[in-house]
View 1 (cartoon, rainbow, N blue to C red):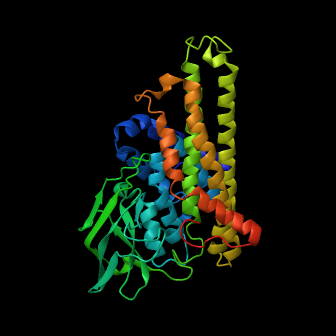
View 2 (cartoon, one colour; view 1 turned 90 degrees about the vertical axis):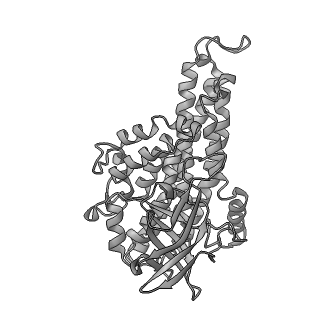
View 3 (cartoon, rainbow, N blue to C red; view 1 turned 180 degrees about the vertical axis):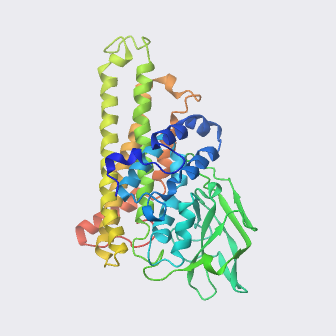
Length: 404
């Protein structure tokens, strides 16, 4: 197991140092966001570096990193470009559910795919569902000879446009829920970049159409206890990864605040406390507060990752996991509430550092607030806080499915 302090020196095949990879992703990120240029080159570089295999054991072509180390990588990648890191969220959860889990059918197949550098996306959400987070799907898996056929429409297909495979959640004729993992270039799979959100514009979070898509026998994984989605709190890591992306945005807010203030020369308000913006104690105070917020955000994400790692270890060993899984969901929910608030506030205060000139469209500094606000809206903070409050006051368990 690699120590957390050495994460940046991990050397997947194709990249000598993760610093170089992050620098490549960061280059032009603001301009891509402003001009809606999808980051295909960045994802190709990540694919070549086999970054998606970090959690696989070394014997299977990965790096065997802990979840703390993975979240550290996610935070750093998000500081470079949160669109790119968020596009990988569903891949990382696929690795946990099917490529690492000893209970997953055809695990060796999925591990080999991940070890090759391939990226796996997700097509889950349906706008036709009246209940957000529900697990009954209109997308249908129907028998076809020795295999199946897949038909349906999925929204929020984050990362799928960049992916080599897509995991599609569907319902079988007998009412069972199933994950179908198929290549994205298979006949009948149509991925459309029609996401029109205020932020996270480049994550490929658009619509996936599935029209009579062939599914081979070994590509369908039916939900069962202890398999894939068959765990309580199976979605905790996905939620924590989103919070890791938000923490990375806050790191970028800090770096932009420092750069912005240093770049402001002698032009300053006549009534300010100092003639130079960089020497103004009030502006220095804002940067200091953003710095502290970024430190706190990183700390709570990594602390939550340690708890979720305990869940993964229990499941790896086939041990009872219900109690620790609840603790992981609790830690992840608390981290979200803290990190979302710190990041959204700091992204707004960035403009206090830069003044009116910082609002220029060419700078695109508003992307930080837009991206953080969009990610925070994935799971309403009020509902998370209420659930935590009910648990603290009355011992009411957190919801076991959906967004916990």
